[in-house]
Image (tube, rainbow, N blue to C red; front, side, top):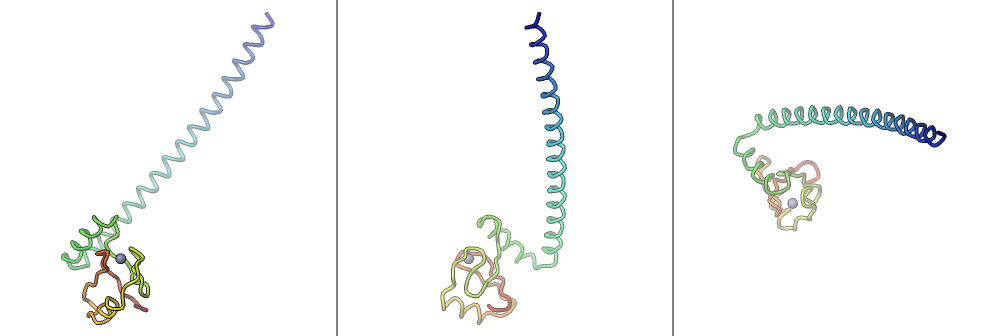
Length: 123
Ligand SMILES: [Zn+2]
């Protein structure tokens, strides 16, 4: 009789623990789903901004960017930071730097890694 009471007590205790774990699990799943939903919203917003930015650029340049991005891990353009390509992190040669400097402001210049280099101040 005493063994039955002990076993029943253990069972009840385990059922309570199980219920607590299930509640925690449900809360975690709800939290995960909310975060995934936020990420989806942010991605949609980012895609819309990207599309709007692309619409303002020449179609040929956007097509070039997308071809390079597809081959370069999603990054079709990168800033030229001093001598360094922000995409591949390689330093441009003196010859390449001279070519970048001689290029017209609206000319598309590309790194050896193929990415479009975005020239700004300091380049
Ligand atoms: Zn590069």
